Image 1 (spheres, rainbow, N blue to C red):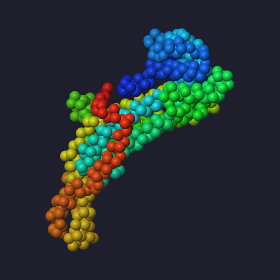
Image 2: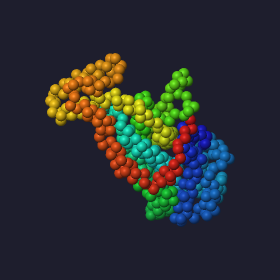
Image 3: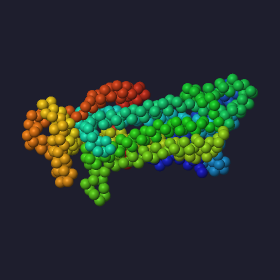
Image 4: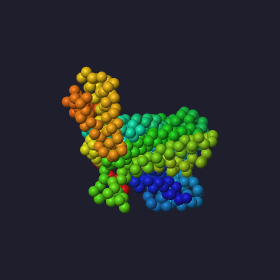
Length: 485
């Protein structure tokens, strides 16, 4: 397989952000390998290896990026050597001839492949965090706008007590905040493999430095610092533990579950015609049914989120079968799984942002559905009002029970509107409280503390999370998410 193709990014990179697609591109991967080789040489020279010259380091610095000709050379070399790292050692040596003899000195292939992967994982998580912060801010705006709008709640997808459109959104937001926390934890916990040698014993470097253990430790620490990491894993095998991949993909899979839940709720709301995702004026919902407004974006989120969730299982399986100091059955798998997970998460976030920025709410439809169900929910309030007016609780309950069943028959068997309140108004038994019926049926009186909960949640949880300086630039840009397809 040619060197360029060995790390070809998945098809989904076409639809990911430019930053994420570039991060996992062959060009960036091999640039990172060269930077790792450069910093290894710098540290080795600093610690006294005289065979590493200033000229060698200068030439390496001047050739960190590959041009098309170098990609061609690397491809040809890999055909011959059947080893991607050695093909690129040879290619880098041709570009920096003064360094040809010292590139990769003392290192194993995993020095570049694994350390590069850790760099990519950490950077990719940072990219996702910024995008997730923007999505949270968009849904926060939506929750604030509709914090007071009553809507029918559902349990078991059956009518339940009222909530508000904004309060329902806070349920989505809370899970997104947990995802923000989990992804940040995973990002901040990533260390560097460092300079550990072929089985993690640093034997080759101990030989290079004539048995000086302090210099070997100093080399590990210095390269770690040069690559921008605060620490290296204290022990490794030939690779960093594949358990790290589990820890990194777990919060992505968890975010996938959050995104799927949000998009599913929106798909159900679209069916109810209460809330819809953005729908372009020229968009076609169906090739046959011209009237349709399919929730295509939310369906795409669900589709990709399922893929994101199952990738975590792949990491678990790979980690569990790494024999002793390593096997190679992880390599091809990880070259697909790790980029795919981040590219997928990136696309899901972009689509979720696009949806959150264009949600359409239909208050009249919501009010109509409330009107169909609220009379049944108001029966307890009516009974209490009768009792307060001097009536008998059991007698009032029986009156309401009979009228409720009659109204339910109208709705379920005849397809008519819920006329329970009209039946109450016509029944002389309820004369003492008929003047209160309007107040007893005000939807706002059935939402409890939903608006106050929205205010408190946004102020005490969402706003502090978004005040993190890391997200300032992304939030200030304020640009809307555009979908490529």
